[in-house]
Image (cartoon, rainbow, N blue to C red; front, side):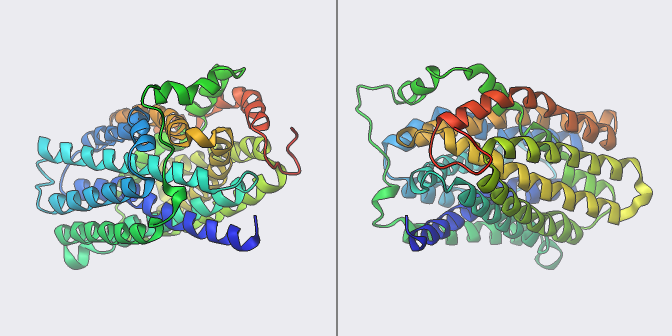
Amino acid sequence: MSSLAVRRTLAIVALLYVVEGLPLALFRDLLPVWLLRHGVSIEAVGALSGLSLAWSLKFLWSPLVDRYGTYGRWIVAALVAMGALLFLFSASDAAGLGALLVVAIGAFCAASATQDVAIDAYTIRLVERGHEGAANAVRISAYRVALILGGGGMLLLPSWIGWPATLRVAGAMLLAFAGLVVALTAGHDRSRPRRADASQIPFIDALRPWAARPKLRAVIFFVLLYRLADQAMGPMVKPFWVARGLSNEQIGLVSVTFGALATMAGGAAGGLFVERRGIPSGLLVLGVLALLSNLGYAAAAFWPESGRFGVYAASVVDSFCAGLAAAAFMAFLMRICDREHAAVQYACLTALYALPGWLAGMVSGWAVAHTSYAAWFVLTAAFGLPALLALPAARAWAEAAGGEVGEGETR
């Protein structure tokens, strides 16, 4: 693959993952602050994070993305749906948190999850073996740019234009990106999914190769728990900032924007580490650092006298380490997927690792309300430790998948 082709591929990946990250940024960063500022309880906000179940269930409809239409059309349809829903949110009563609003937020999550299936499948087909580390560094950086736009940038607007107008701006932004995706995917055959024979059962057919591999249960265990520490802490990060009296602008600038930049730096460093030392070494070293970073937030919660600067430091360290671990983990997931079953297999993997986070998020508000932020953050740091026991199985799968390997990675 020529250097020009590599750069073009990475540019496409960058745009797609800005598009993929925007809805998650809005769901994770903007909507919880919107609800908390309108008097919704922390327990309700924590429970509402359970709507992220859509990202765990997306494997159920991932075969449809593989069989019908093109990946580009699925992405555009999801963006248009989410943009329309944001306009609906702008006219809703957040304080009441009625059933219609909850259903609408759930639909937003489902559309975002569907978009993820299409974008991930498109990317797996696009990126050549051996370039996963570089591609994932770009993915993580682009994702954080999306967090800056959808989280940090949007949180700067309510004090100027109010919450309804802020939500409408977010909706218009998604619609604008839909137009960019149309321009990107038009005429590109690689965006077209493989059409399976109608007599086949595509979901079972896609997973059959994995069933024949050894150590399947250990790999499933590893995928389930490797990123749980970060996912369990995430739903309570913005409420913690609100509880410490920090403004929307401080949350948007430091937690989201500076945090996104720190994660971009971590993703770049993690991608370089994986390229040089290999995926297995990255999973171990970078994963341990990510677990330890949760304790920074615990320390800020234990010692409120550290002030806002203690919270700022915890945020930057946590974001950087999250980028490190994500680079290794996403490279691992890409490596073990078969290209011809990319949509279904990758959707299943991301659904697996999202599921425990959904469960933890559902109870996170209750846990904080009945204990403390500090206790919850310490507990989340321990959640990912069992995954390290399954690292040998993950290493075996990464090596068996073939392709280029880094200096520290053996076949």
